[in-house]
Length: 458
Image (cartoon, rainbow, N blue to C red):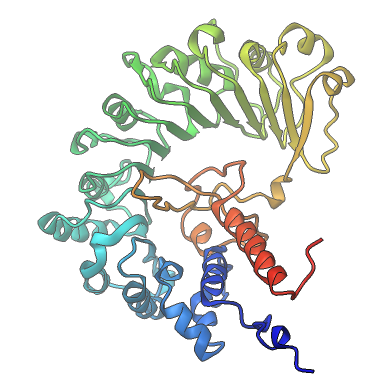
């Protein structure tokens, strides 16, 4: 007898178009390894049905990479198929990537630049200067929320400072929320930047601090500050600046001691609502500095989360500062640390409010027995399996909200963005939107197939 219910089931290899589109979206968001084929192109070549679903799914075409003539041709297709959604684009014009003229790129991008929400540039000073002139006349960058600029060439007279075109370009982005600059030490062209509404700032080589002080004074909504190659002198001689909205601070220090850097920072930045402090150190001990008192409860009264990465506790002054910071800490994260800052005496005396501690999975780092007995110990991914700090975490728009950085699932091979842009943003220790989407898709598919009698959900 013919089983009508059996005949009406949808074969497992033919999920509904809506489910297939969600699967394509998750696949397209995965980091792309060097030499790997573009996911949307691979999907489109499987079958006519897959191609039809892919072409009708603009969200899988919104991440664009340009690093050569072939990728420029592909970008034209991506730009057309991603409409009307906002797109994220990475452009590299280094000579080894068969340099493209700025006019060629502008010819392709200008009709769509009003949809650009995130832009990562690794270009020459000449390209930036030309783009700035064209875009200033047309006012096309008002929708840009995330900007990352790395220049790979400098004019001789700008050897010790960033090219002027870098600041002209950044000044065009009136709606900017997240800014990352990698430039030479002296930043003396800060007057080109108008008051900003930045929520995230990531800067490298901040030796004199002029740009940094300017942005801090004019960005009262700043929520996250990342200082790379940090030196204590960046704030010397500056008036105290209050950042009431800042909740997260990342310091990657070199040469200067950890203690001196934190103490100097505390004297020139008022951070009443700082809740998370991340310190990325150097493996070799630096030069000690004169002790100046640090009252952590006064300078960082709301500090609750302390993350230490690659920090060597070989200087008594640094250990003393960490002891001061421990007064309000409830969550401690230790990543790739040579020697722990904790012993039984310090825990009993200082870390009275500690509730959670995180260490890399499989680490041989030994925690005192008294600590394991009093707090929750969690595993985090080893450094080798975490996203590198160089990985650019692109902006995703959510219901028209402001910019937010997302972390992709851990990968073993580097992506094009990591290769093209060094140290663009720190990783976040939380599950990514892509991971959550994948879980939702799997759950939804199981429910659908279970209702149709295809599988048994255990």
